[in-house]
Image (cartoon, rainbow, N blue to C red):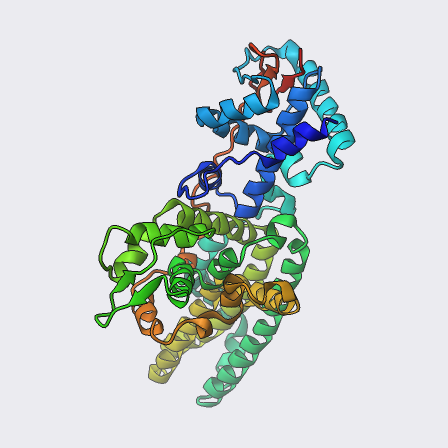
Length: 470
């Protein structure tokens, strides 16, 4: 292994220090990757290109590495600089889809794995084995759409009340009011308490299954804030509050924000806010939130975390928990609906029954809707807080403190301004499940020669390879 060259490759920076929409941010945004996974993918891309430049035989990238490669080619100056550092121009040329090339490219992939393990150790599975990195969570996709079941919950409960009424009719006519309503309310809320215990335990078990996954394990503090709160404004609150506490921004008497220090730092989120405020004497916090949350760095955070959340709630494991809760609550509602039908059929007074049904239906629907956020806002955040509080390294980091303690760490002068934006913002997690956008992964493969002039390629269902040196 050429250690001197590898050190140079490791040190190559794809981004400029103060760039708002640099290479890595664009890569993360377009593929809905977390910040951690983006950096891992970039490192694996560097390793692949190092092998391509130093080996005399063909090597082949994974699907994830090929996505990075395609993206880097668009940044022509950066790609030229990188190839100059490697000492060879590595071209990426579409293939002819020649079937006879299949075996050659398969061997190239096997060879790449062997060379990788010799030089770098074991390949990270989430980059080299899976086409979609979230498949590494190993969650089975559910055949049932939880959002669809949730929307049709009341309809199913009403339909179920007809056979339930026929089944329990002899019992219903024997129980008189108010005994029925009193007994029903006791049973209803006792079952709600049991369901609360069930979903907490089940969601914690589901989280324990995926928490060792590197992508979940390395979520940033602000990504976790978004998981917990479901509102991008909450993330912006933390960023702006830190700028206020560091005296880079001040709150004027008219509650507008004024930028005191225009210098940029290491935090991209803070830099984004500073650059927005640079050209204005003062800005309202509402306008700042509205503009900043559409910036690539914040948009990327939202899309990446939503994509992970979506993978969880569309899983068979999550659907089983949610469906079990809906079945239990549906059966409960069908019983009181049956009582209502029986009362109408027998000409009994149903006013109090109707008044009871309305809040019970609202409670049931609210409880079911809560399922889609409960795992992230309560279960995962509570489990992580216990782990993080024992980590002394994060105690002095404002982002982690903000995740741990929330609005408690906000400046008392800033809290009223921050709260004024919360009332008008939409909860991102209230959206129905379904991908906000599919990951823009490339299925185009390639093969190339790393000779200084040109290379051959194969574009198929997977990437072909990159030939070795001269």
